[in-house]
Length: 407
Image 1 (cartoon, one colour):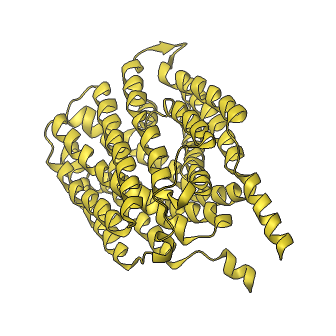
Image 2: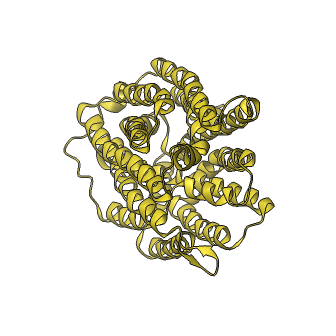
């Protein structure tokens, strides 16, 4: 009976999972169509696509750091989480009103601001809800639900593309889908009012604890360097669009989200068992392989496999670093640690996306240069991770052994 209780996730983690499910239905109805809406309907060049996605991530990153610090400072999570999700939900329908890329730029920037406000406090809530030895499982569950919504979103988009095709111009189809994406978004916001904050955990937050430590600094430096390799998913979609008809793009994107969903919780459980360092080493190597294959292979069937592999990579990256941060954050300052990590690495996504956009037309041996560059950076980051970053798993095992002896 005790083992069963230990393995059960909290009610509030499950509600946050449902919130992520509906939110990502909304988001992923939009994302696979956005590159084509920006470059075709609005007539922007590819480098503008990189600018929009890069600055969107900048807004997330800056607010990650501010929101994480503020959440720990005032010892509150829920109001920030509700406001962040609400802001994103209400800005999404405005995408349909954009007639120029600067307008879309503003809407996308504000929509991503909502993500920056909510993300660190939300993850800190999960860190407080669950035991340390099942943090990976908890973060994996939320990501699994998030990704399940991300499967349904592109399916809805693909259905609407098919159903509305021939009935209205392509640009108007995109605008209609953007409007309909508001419905699941607002359902996700409503669910948040059912979540209860753990006041006893909030009381443990120490305002005098120092965030910076040798282990955290080493981890952050390696993660920041790797971020330069992480050009946005839009570039992988754009590459797929060179090989596939438009109607098939949401389908391969669906494969990405399906793999994301299937592997999110197993990735978290493996992180609990193997430790975050080993899982991140595997993730960096996997990303390098994916980029090389995207660069040099153009087979439509292979693209399905590559997008699935990309989903596996993202399942690890959206779970494992959070486990590391919650396990090593001093003074229960989970939101500050998570926000700092997400802020620093996210800020570097701007130069990563701008670089990818600027180098898109440059080819080596017939391959887009950004994929080759990203693979090289990933390999270097993997080696740095092996040499300079410690794994908190050893500390956890030592603590467990000490407690076992004391009993």
